[in-house]
Image (cartoon, rainbow, N blue to C red):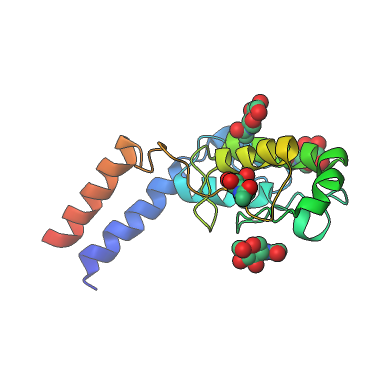
Length: 159
Ligand SMILES: *[C@@H]1O[C@H](CO)[C@@H](O)[C@H](O)[C@H]1NC(C)=O
Ligand SMILES: *[C@@H]1O[C@H](CO)[C@@H](O)[C@H](O)[C@H]1NC(C)=O
Ligand SMILES: *[C@@H]1O[C@H](CO)[C@@H](O)[C@H](O)[C@H]1NC(C)=O
Ligand SMILES: *[C@@H]1O[C@H](CO)[C@@H](O)[C@H](O)[C@H]1NC(C)=O
């Protein structure tokens, strides 16, 4: 890699850092919702810490992970819906929503997919599968970051 390319990457790194508000320079892992409106990679990291909020109400396969599955079987529906796990998972989703509205789980699920899975599951019963493809949801990055990516691409290409 040429030095000029390294410089761009280095610059982008600082571009990311500059998005940290000076009044709140420390990254909060215990209260990820403090980390709002930050650079994309920090948003993802904040979302990760939201998902580290575990509860004894959500044991084993009841736990929502970065994988995005919510493998609640039909027979576990009542336990999931009438115990505290729905509430806890809603809180976790809300936390992620605050820090990263476009958060995508590893299986491709968006926040609303998980939310829908729980809504349908607690209405009609779970069946061991979870939704992971929002129909009609634009996966497109925001125009601002698209422009930034385009710029980076051009910069790297022409150097
Ligand atoms: C949940 O289901 C998915 C897809 O069937 C599977 O890949 C995954 O291992 C399951 N996870 C758990 C914790 O059962
Ligand atoms: C963790 O989950 C609980 C609900 O189980 C919620 O009250 C709390 O606000 C969550 N913490 C964070 C940092 O989101
Ligand atoms: C999940 O859906 C409920 C309504 O069913 C809504 O009130 C809540 O804001 C949604 N949460 C997220 C994170 O989208
Ligand atoms: C199983 O649950 C998923 C998620 O709620 C739903 O989309 C699907 O239609 C269900 N399948 C059956 C056979 O009920």
